[in-house]
Length: 264
Image (cartoon, rainbow, N blue to C red; front, side):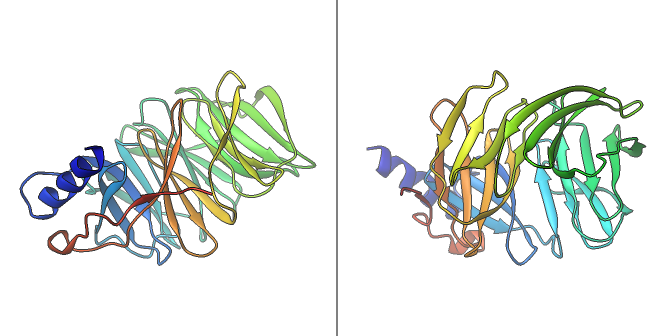
């Protein structure tokens, strides 16, 4: 019955009978941005017309997009709110728990910027010799940064002066890291993907090997891209689930059975 319901929901949405629930946005391997709609196991991905994006993150309220030379901000409908010149190359993005305040870290220049109330402003932060792997905002006054030296550490800093307030050791890790606005982290240890909540409780995610990128898609959803080009949608919660997203299609041509749960 559940399978029939999922199939029917996607089929009716594809035919234009209803608006499929919007999950968020994902960045494809070719740098285009896709809108992701539907329900778990019956996704629809459609092009937004946004292209040449080298990094992206979405909170459900805002999207932060990095092209080679600019940073764009979009709203939940995909409309561009602002676009400013930015350091060349990729960026790392994060959000505060409301999803309406964003942070951008630019590795090429070591600059941190905060987007609030329609404006970008610089924030002081010096990671020293450590590499920055992920960033998010704990609240309007503090950021959480994952640093890599000999091992991973989670550092809480004040945005007013860049002072370090707290450091939590996370141990050795390989692969990409994602810091989420609720204080949880996704990282890899001993070949397994680990979800660590704000209380420090860890569980293993059923992600395949070869994940090269982790980004927020909006709400409780995270995008994972693999080195083979596969795009995965991870539903977080007490029982996380991993799905493969279908290739994008015009709404009229959607194949309703294009997504499936990833299993090892």
